[in-house]
Image 1: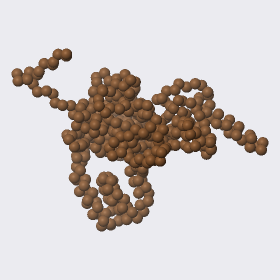
Image 2: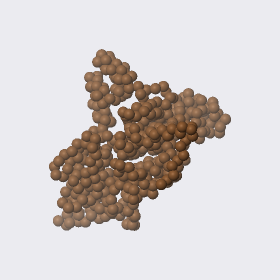
Image 3: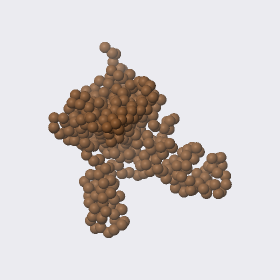
Image 4: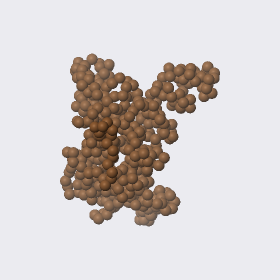
Amino acid sequence: MRTDNLAMPLRTLSLLLIGVVLWGGGQAEPAEPATLGGPTEPRVVVHVGRNRDVRGFVKHEDEDFIVIRTVDAEIESFSKARVLKIVRLVEPEAGQRGVVFLRDGQVREGVIMADEFDHVVMVINGVRSDLPRETVDHVTLHPTFEQRFAEYKRSARSAEDRLRMCRWLMQERRYELARAELAALLDESSVPDALRLLKLVEAQLALEGDLVGTAGETQDVQDDAGLPTMPVLTHAEVNLIRVYEIDFERPPRVAVDPETIATMIKLYGTNREIPASEMERRALYRDDPLEIVELLFKLQARELYPRVEVLTEPWALNLFRRRVHNTWLLNSCATAHCHGAPGAGQLFLHRRRHKDARVRYANLLILERLEVDPDWPLINYDDPMMSLLIQYGLPRNQARKPHPDVRGWKPVFGRGGQRMLRDTLSWIDAMMQPRPDYPVKYEPPSLMPPAPPPSASGEPEPPREPR
């Protein structure tokens, strides 16, 4: 009995020590919503009792206890045996479907846009619904395409399994992936059905030639019915942007061919950054590709940057894809009723084929290069909070530069959107500084109405005096 009596105080003391460490030695912290939880900290709603829910970020968890920092910036710990339920909030990808289980037993299925502390946002048959957290029990997500594809790849052991996977890719309209998988299958074995399917895939890709063009030329994409053809980027331009955004502290995988190294030595052999001896120069061919890229940057050998192949997405661009572009920019700004439609006006964003990097990086360049207001850049790298992209997403009573009063507009960064605000600020901070000037010729498209025609005399009509 004496041992049992001591066990609980010791465990309680352990949790108190955890709380002190997490709180920073017991010193008070300001409750700033923008810094409560990191971008990777799990979010939970702890049902403590019938009339009490605690919402926050998981700071520590084991089999018996969970410690969270609440949305009010307080540390609380709970014995799992003494709470009714722990609901873990989900992080949906753009367009990911799922199921919302309501507390009254109802079930709703649709596209899950956000699972927030205060509410759940979902789209059912094109209609957006905001469900208060008090009515929601929990949310589950259907597997993403990437997850299903990875499972297919893992379990496809026979040629028939791989052929079945390629048929599924066809159904999902992932024709580029289907072509690559079919080509790999035919390289290893002769499968007549695979050859026939490959011909179908090639025919489909030929029909969808709007994103197939000559390397180095700006390609076009038809976004939606009623929209003119809009320019997007090429694969080479996507790769070049990735080169400029390489972060050596969190580097992507890169490849540099021997010919590029030889050209570098030939063009910059007199530079002191290039070794003088033949032996040291030969050693460059055995160096880590990242070290060669770093050397190219020191030399400012910009004519050789396009020859660096960036195999995985740099950190900041990955944040843009997952936390901004696919999370809220497409769902809130680039909709058919806003900046992704014929009435988009000056700011137009591509929606169709948004998972294609050529389309996504075109949207990035639009945000970087379009001037909506000369005093308010869409992305303010010096003061991210003053970005027009941020200001237009805030509730009007919180913004220094409120969004124009248009029908159907809702703030992205309202009470339930603080996590998206934090993620967006993190992305802007992560982009390379000082900002590089990408050598990509791209002009943001505009759907502004044409200027009024000149008067009969050939002179433009004078502006009307304000009333």
